[in-house]
Image (tube, rainbow, N blue to C red):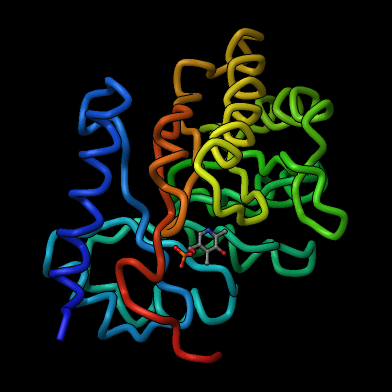
Length: 233
Ligand SMILES: *Cc1c(COP(=O)(O)O)cnc(C)c1O
């Protein structure tokens, strides 16, 4: 039976191999373990193998896990949709929100971020392949949203996130991810306030992390390949 520890090592091997193939330094690309629908015990197991950053999609489930695992020094990323009536609980518990796609949500997160916590790290989510029912700001509107976020006192604009439709083919995957890199570069070039911390391009999951790394990803979000098949919610 493959353990979480064994799977984590395999995923790290894949990341390292993809970095080498792309002529990038291993260590350029971070691993976010996506623990949605996984038990707190599974997160503990991953942490025991050295994993510290975890991603959650569902707010209530994520907050329960964060509270349950308060004794561990973990960094929690919200990667799923955030409705405006849920911003407070997110601002109070998470370290990052990668799924910001409207200024109104960003404004609420900033206003509701407690003073005793450091600024909340946020990424703009970009709808890079124009999925019809998908979250994410249109690529042409990403810079304006980033500009608005950069003016909010309790947020730290850290980068971009994209979640394209799965495609089996490496070349097609890389092409879509490269469009996200172009939006990232455009925002970086604007030298918004705090631009030196705009360093995160969150692209790639279990099935397409190699293509994402080839296209410039600095953070892959990996669920199944770390924890195994997800239990039903
Ligand atoms: C579930 C999820 C992932 C991880 O997907 P896997 O295919 O299990 O690696 C990554 N990013 C987001 C936004 C997700 O919802």
